[in-house]
Amino acid sequence: MKIKKAVFPVAGLGTRFLPATKAMPKEMLPVVDKPLIQYAVEEALASGIEQLIFVTGGGKGALENHFDRSFQLEETLKQREKLELLKEIESLVPKSGTIIYTRQSEPLGLGHAIWCARDIVGDEPFAVLLADDLIKSETPVLHQMIKEFDRLRASTVAVIEVPKEETSKYGILDADTPSDTTFRVNGMIEKPSADVAPSNLAVIGRYILTPKIFDILGDQGKGAGGEIQLTDAMSQLLTEQPIFGYRFEGTRFDCGDKAGFQMANLAFALEHPEIKDTLLPYLKKMFC
Image 1 (cartoon, rainbow, N blue to C red):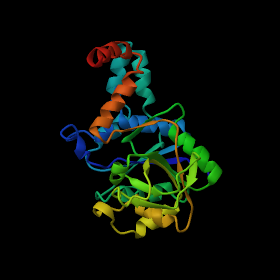
Image 2: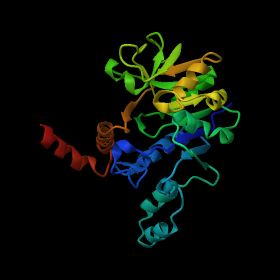
Image 3: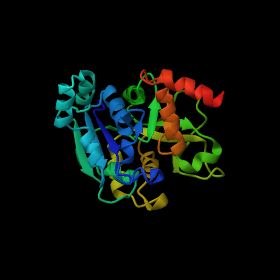
Image 4: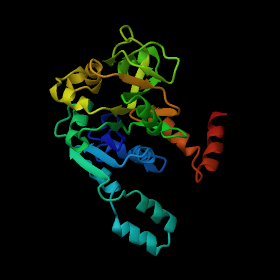
């Protein structure tokens, strides 16, 4: 089946970015002039996704408003003849029915957030995008993964190699050191310490999953951190279906981390036509 639906878990509190996220969703933090969530949405739409499913929590009104019409702003831009800006603002609003919102009533983890979308996704494979993982690439990473899914017809996760001392931050794959871009996964473990990690192959925030995952998540107890972990559910899924790792083309920025967020701003700013010519001499002056 064609991958038509994408789930965006956006119910998190963003505590690592307090106080900035006290009144603003962390997904609305801007990288140059666009919020993180917009980059993820644009990636999904450019990859052929037809329905965007946001799993939200309290205090996410700004995110919902971002993808809705703002008649007063649009009229002001029209009167001031700022037509390019008007066109950009209007393009943020997908056609009716493209975005669906559902609530995660309790903060029970990523696995639980995805399970909350089960009735909307239904009995078909779907994508999951985590806005914290911003990926700069010529071809959208999700598009790359969908092409692999069309070939493999199995759940697929985006993978990077991390330093051994950082395995405790990620879901880690048990897999032979891959020579190919796509490889079969033998097992998965959530946030293992370096001394027990089976590899340094880490899963990051792009997934394509089969609907069987909903059955497993619905029966699953709490795991690491007292949360319902997606990694644990995928480990169980492996007993019934294959899962593949995919080493994508592109550069990933961990925007859930303050340093990673600033790196993303620099990388995207240095390609932004309005500011790159001003920013580059300043950086050279600072560091040369």
